[in-house]
Length: 281
Image (cartoon, rainbow, N blue to C red; front, side, top):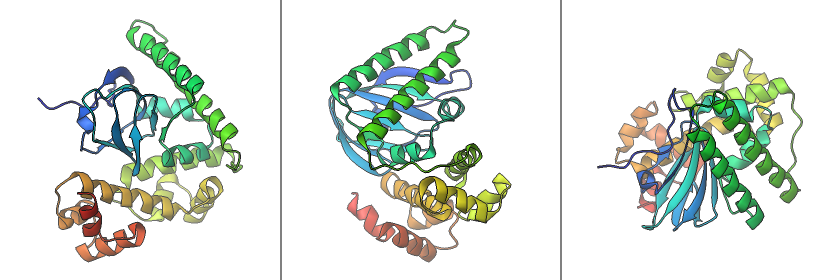
């Protein structure tokens, strides 16, 4: 029987806590619909999270933001991780007040090895999260876990500020922060079909110029850069974890023809789709 994806929630279960060997992700790339926090308990594996590749062993902490891709290779028989997965809505409520730059950094560094005291804190957090998950009759259950999630995000934010002094956090208004979050969610949702900044600006009911200004204020890159990064990542995942032909990938991502896909991918990935697929075999 094929293993099931442990990183799933449902309308009835807005968060799920457990432990798994993560066999579902062994040589198979899956997307986190919501957000997931994981702590490696034993064994080791090579993890690919948003094209960041790093070995996982005991004590490794993984934070996947909504829309992230995750895959494991070389997973040992004793590999196990504790996990807590949150619906996109619950995560958005918990993370609303955090600076977008924090999530930009987390997206580029989803895997970390905390210091021993911080690892102990993460272990205690998982035990409390599991207690809340099992307490299904608690009428404040979702609120409690949302607060627990906010606590560990704030703790991680603290470590980022203290141990990365060179990181400059841009000043943005609350309105700009909210619009940036909505833009990022729309890109995750629509990037396989829409690659123009104007589409996202229209959905946000703002001008393309204002959207570009917001994105540059928040993450120091253009809105088109973020869209192209998301599309390139989608192509990489399809090349690496499926047997789809190049034409099928072009059709799925709504490129006008195979030649256009090849030029687009080479511009943003530095190699052709065929070269990328061959390097990952």
